[in-house]
Image 1 (cartoon, protein in one colour):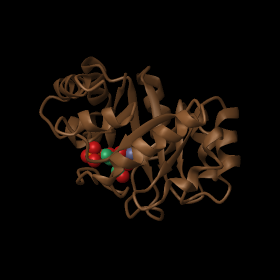
Image 2: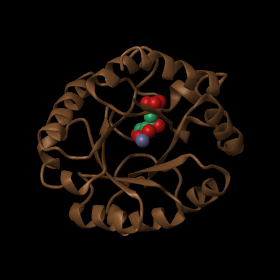
Image 3: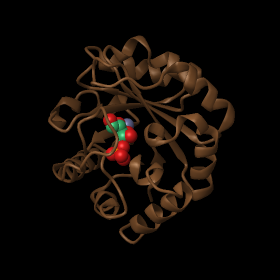
Length: 220
Ligand code: DX5
Ligand code: ZN
Protein backbone atom coordinates (compact mmCIF):
# COMPACT_ATOMS: atom_id res chain seq x y z
CA UNK A 1 0.00 0.00 0.00
CA UNK A 2 0.98 3.62 -0.34
CA UNK A 3 0.04 6.93 1.26
CA UNK A 4 -0.47 10.35 -0.27
CA UNK A 5 1.40 13.23 1.36
CA UNK A 6 0.13 16.55 -0.01
CA UNK A 7 2.78 19.26 0.13
CA UNK A 8 1.42 22.52 1.50
CA UNK A 9 4.09 24.40 -0.46
CA UNK A 10 1.54 24.80 -3.25
CA UNK A 11 -1.38 25.57 -0.91
CA UNK A 12 -2.89 28.98 -0.25
CA UNK A 13 -1.16 30.05 2.98
CA UNK A 14 -3.88 32.56 3.77
CA UNK A 15 -6.29 29.69 4.38
CA UNK A 16 -4.07 26.84 5.41
CA UNK A 17 -6.51 25.19 7.83
CA UNK A 18 -9.14 24.97 5.11
CA UNK A 19 -6.60 23.61 2.62
CA UNK A 20 -5.66 20.90 5.12
CA UNK A 21 -9.30 19.98 5.79
CA UNK A 22 -9.67 19.40 2.06
CA UNK A 23 -6.85 16.87 1.78
CA UNK A 24 -8.03 15.12 4.94
CA UNK A 25 -11.42 14.72 3.30
CA UNK A 26 -9.75 13.37 0.15
CA UNK A 27 -8.03 10.59 2.08
CA UNK A 28 -4.51 11.90 2.63
CA UNK A 29 -2.79 10.54 5.72
CA UNK A 30 0.43 12.53 5.75
CA UNK A 31 0.98 16.28 5.49
CA UNK A 32 4.28 17.21 3.85
CA UNK A 33 5.81 20.46 5.09
CA UNK A 34 8.73 21.89 3.09
CA UNK A 35 11.17 23.88 5.20
CA UNK A 36 13.67 25.91 3.14
CA UNK A 37 16.39 28.24 4.37
CA UNK A 38 17.56 30.14 1.29
CA UNK A 39 21.01 28.51 1.64
CA UNK A 40 20.69 24.81 1.02
CA UNK A 41 18.06 25.64 -1.60
CA UNK A 42 17.42 28.94 -3.37
CA UNK A 43 14.08 29.56 -1.68
CA UNK A 44 12.72 30.45 1.76
CA UNK A 45 9.49 28.99 3.09
CA UNK A 46 8.24 28.27 6.58
CA UNK A 47 9.56 27.03 9.90
CA UNK A 48 8.89 26.04 13.48
CA UNK A 49 5.97 28.39 14.36
CA UNK A 50 3.94 27.14 11.42
CA UNK A 51 4.52 23.50 12.35
CA UNK A 52 3.41 24.33 15.90
CA UNK A 53 0.19 25.87 14.61
CA UNK A 54 -0.49 23.00 12.21
CA UNK A 55 -0.12 20.52 15.05
CA UNK A 56 -3.11 22.13 16.76
CA UNK A 57 -5.44 21.80 13.81
CA UNK A 58 -4.70 18.40 12.28
CA UNK A 59 -4.18 14.82 13.34
CA UNK A 60 -2.52 13.93 10.04
CA UNK A 61 1.06 12.69 10.27
CA UNK A 62 3.18 15.84 9.97
CA UNK A 63 6.20 15.18 7.75
CA UNK A 64 8.78 17.97 7.80
CA UNK A 65 11.25 17.95 4.93
CA UNK A 66 14.21 20.05 6.05
CA UNK A 67 15.93 21.62 3.07
CA UNK A 68 18.31 23.53 5.28
CA UNK A 69 22.03 23.61 5.98
CA UNK A 70 23.18 22.03 9.24
CA UNK A 71 19.82 20.39 9.91
CA UNK A 72 21.22 18.88 13.10
CA UNK A 73 20.82 22.27 14.74
CA UNK A 74 17.04 22.25 14.26
CA UNK A 75 15.80 18.69 13.75
CA UNK A 76 14.79 18.02 17.36
CA UNK A 77 13.04 21.39 17.59
CA UNK A 78 10.79 20.29 14.72
CA UNK A 79 9.85 17.16 16.68
CA UNK A 80 9.10 19.33 19.71
CA UNK A 81 6.98 21.59 17.52
CA UNK A 82 4.85 18.58 16.58
CA UNK A 83 6.44 16.83 13.60
CA UNK A 84 5.95 13.06 13.43
CA UNK A 85 8.50 12.60 10.66
CA UNK A 86 11.63 14.67 10.06
CA UNK A 87 13.89 14.26 7.06
CA UNK A 88 17.31 15.83 6.65
CA UNK A 89 19.38 15.94 3.49
CA UNK A 90 22.44 13.70 3.32
CA UNK A 91 24.14 16.53 1.38
CA UNK A 92 23.58 19.03 4.22
CA UNK A 93 24.61 17.10 7.31
CA UNK A 94 28.18 16.25 8.30
CA UNK A 95 26.88 14.23 11.26
CA UNK A 96 23.94 12.42 9.79
CA UNK A 97 24.00 9.46 12.18
CA UNK A 98 23.87 11.80 15.16
CA UNK A 99 20.95 13.76 13.74
CA UNK A 100 18.94 10.65 12.85
CA UNK A 101 19.46 9.24 16.32
CA UNK A 102 18.43 12.53 17.93
CA UNK A 103 15.21 12.63 15.88
CA UNK A 104 14.35 9.09 16.95
CA UNK A 105 15.16 9.76 20.58
CA UNK A 106 12.90 12.82 20.47
CA UNK A 107 10.09 10.49 19.39
CA UNK A 108 9.71 10.97 15.64
CA UNK A 109 10.55 8.95 12.55
CA UNK A 110 13.93 9.86 11.11
CA UNK A 111 14.40 10.24 7.38
CA UNK A 112 17.28 10.79 4.99
CA UNK A 113 16.50 12.95 1.97
CA UNK A 114 18.67 12.59 -1.13
CA UNK A 115 19.01 14.84 -4.17
CA UNK A 116 18.74 13.55 -7.75
CA UNK A 117 22.50 13.71 -8.41
CA UNK A 118 23.57 12.15 -5.10
CA UNK A 119 24.31 8.42 -5.40
CA UNK A 120 22.58 5.91 -3.14
CA UNK A 121 25.92 4.74 -1.82
CA UNK A 122 25.93 7.90 0.31
CA UNK A 123 23.16 6.30 2.40
CA UNK A 124 24.84 2.99 2.94
CA UNK A 125 26.17 3.44 6.47
CA UNK A 126 23.27 5.50 7.81
CA UNK A 127 20.44 3.43 6.37
CA UNK A 128 19.99 1.31 9.49
CA UNK A 129 19.57 4.49 11.56
CA UNK A 130 16.71 5.74 9.38
CA UNK A 131 12.98 4.98 9.33
CA UNK A 132 12.50 6.30 5.82
CA UNK A 133 14.40 7.65 2.81
CA UNK A 134 13.05 10.58 0.81
CA UNK A 135 14.12 10.26 -2.80
CA UNK A 136 13.97 13.60 -4.57
CA UNK A 137 12.61 13.30 -8.09
CA UNK A 138 13.25 17.01 -8.75
CA UNK A 139 16.01 19.29 -7.52
CA UNK A 140 14.62 20.68 -4.26
CA UNK A 141 13.58 24.30 -3.95
CA UNK A 142 10.33 24.75 -5.81
CA UNK A 143 7.01 23.10 -6.47
CA UNK A 144 5.70 22.41 -9.96
CA UNK A 145 8.89 21.06 -11.53
CA UNK A 146 9.16 18.20 -13.98
CA UNK A 147 9.70 14.64 -12.71
CA UNK A 148 13.24 13.33 -13.32
CA UNK A 149 12.70 9.79 -14.69
CA UNK A 150 16.02 8.44 -13.33
CA UNK A 151 14.41 8.57 -9.88
CA UNK A 152 12.41 5.45 -10.74
CA UNK A 153 15.45 3.25 -11.02
CA UNK A 154 16.84 4.82 -7.85
CA UNK A 155 13.68 3.79 -6.00
CA UNK A 156 13.96 0.26 -7.39
CA UNK A 157 17.61 -0.09 -6.38
CA UNK A 158 16.96 1.28 -2.90
CA UNK A 159 14.02 -1.08 -2.47
CA UNK A 160 16.27 -4.00 -3.35
CA UNK A 161 18.95 -2.89 -0.86
CA UNK A 162 16.38 -2.51 1.91
CA UNK A 163 15.06 -6.01 1.22
CA UNK A 164 18.52 -7.56 0.90
CA UNK A 165 19.52 -6.09 4.25
CA UNK A 166 16.11 -6.87 5.83
CA UNK A 167 15.75 -3.30 7.01
CA UNK A 168 12.55 -1.63 8.10
CA UNK A 169 12.90 1.52 6.00
CA UNK A 170 10.10 3.11 3.97
CA UNK A 171 10.65 4.91 0.68
CA UNK A 172 9.11 8.34 0.14
CA UNK A 173 9.33 10.17 -3.19
CA UNK A 174 8.99 13.89 -3.78
CA UNK A 175 8.70 16.04 -6.88
CA UNK A 176 6.79 16.14 -10.13
CA UNK A 177 4.28 13.42 -9.27
CA UNK A 178 0.72 13.40 -10.59
CA UNK A 179 -1.92 10.96 -11.79
CA UNK A 180 0.10 10.32 -14.97
CA UNK A 181 3.15 8.87 -13.19
CA UNK A 182 2.06 7.85 -9.68
CA UNK A 183 1.53 4.29 -10.91
CA UNK A 184 5.15 3.92 -11.94
CA UNK A 185 6.56 5.26 -8.68
CA UNK A 186 4.30 3.00 -6.63
CA UNK A 187 5.26 0.02 -8.77
CA UNK A 188 8.94 0.88 -8.31
CA UNK A 189 8.50 0.62 -4.55
CA UNK A 190 7.67 4.07 -3.17
CA UNK A 191 5.25 3.98 -0.23
CA UNK A 192 4.80 7.64 0.66
CA UNK A 193 4.02 9.83 -2.34
CA UNK A 194 4.43 13.58 -2.00
CA UNK A 195 2.31 15.71 -4.31
CA UNK A 196 2.23 19.50 -4.25
CA UNK A 197 0.98 21.08 -7.43
CA UNK A 198 -0.99 17.96 -8.42
CA UNK A 199 -3.10 18.52 -5.29
CA UNK A 200 -3.11 22.24 -4.55
CA UNK A 201 -2.73 23.41 -8.13
CA UNK A 202 -6.21 22.06 -8.80
CA UNK A 203 -9.62 23.58 -8.10
CA UNK A 204 -10.58 20.69 -5.86
CA UNK A 205 -7.70 19.36 -3.71
CA UNK A 206 -9.88 16.66 -2.10
CA UNK A 207 -10.83 15.25 -5.51
CA UNK A 208 -7.18 15.41 -6.61
CA UNK A 209 -6.06 13.34 -3.63
CA UNK A 210 -8.80 10.83 -4.46
CA UNK A 211 -7.69 10.54 -8.09
CA UNK A 212 -4.06 10.11 -7.05
CA UNK A 213 -5.07 7.25 -4.75
CA UNK A 214 -7.14 5.76 -7.54
CA UNK A 215 -4.42 6.10 -10.18
CA UNK A 216 -1.80 4.54 -7.89
CA UNK A 217 -3.98 1.71 -6.64
CA UNK A 218 -4.15 -0.23 -9.90
CA UNK A 219 -0.38 -0.67 -9.69
CA UNK A 220 -0.13 -1.99 -6.13
C1 DX5 B 1 10.40 20.62 -3.67
C2 DX5 B 1 9.64 20.15 -2.48
C3 DX5 B 1 8.42 19.39 -2.80
C4 DX5 B 1 7.38 20.16 -3.60
C5 DX5 B 1 6.76 19.17 -4.53
O1 DX5 B 1 11.60 21.14 -3.26
O2 DX5 B 1 10.45 19.31 -1.67
O3 DX5 B 1 7.83 18.80 -1.65
O4 DX5 B 1 6.38 20.75 -2.82
O5 DX5 B 1 5.93 19.83 -5.40
P1 DX5 B 1 5.41 19.18 -6.75
O6 DX5 B 1 4.60 17.97 -6.36
O7 DX5 B 1 4.61 20.27 -7.38
O8 DX5 B 1 6.62 18.79 -7.54
ZN1 ZN C 1 9.42 18.18 -0.06
